Image (cartoon, rainbow, N blue to C red; front, side):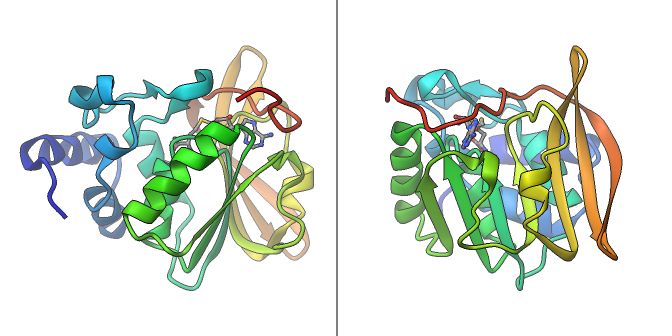
Length: 213
Ligand code: SAH
């Protein structure tokens, strides 16, 4: 795969500065051409460490946040992963390099279709994409070793966390008053422990399948 090297090198350096220490995560970022996931008019900013607008009024997450969330999941190649909020498909593509299989749900048909085209183009055959409401997780495929929400939940997303295996890890942005916090959940002995990681800003998790688009 051909990548715009100088821009990628600069991105890797800023991720390192932001606390990305896991070499496997960094490798997955390096092998994922972000310019294919952003609208063409933002192509020149694809390797800047910033979120960018995508269709349907949504956003592709900032690379640092993608990397830190991926790192917090401690993935290995046996993991079955659920992602809520496919968006551009960038986060799913990064996860797919480190996990066995990624199941990803998006409520906008347009975004889900565009993301699927990208997965095919990149031959990421271990991603399964679905259009629908992810607020109830993906019951037919549960349980999962890892779960990631890329839209902010109004409170602890219990219905989704129920689909986490024993010993499993989930990361999710959760509303805390006017702020959002990235929270890591671990299921151990039937209990779910939680740790706040950092303040973040994501689009909201919205119930129901999108009617338009
Ligand atoms: N992971 C994405 C980030 C996209 S932004 C990326 O790498 O580009 C979050 C996405 O969550 C948006 O596309 C939004 O439409 C979607 N979303 C919000 N609520 C949802 C829900 N209930 N079910 C599925 N997707 C949802």
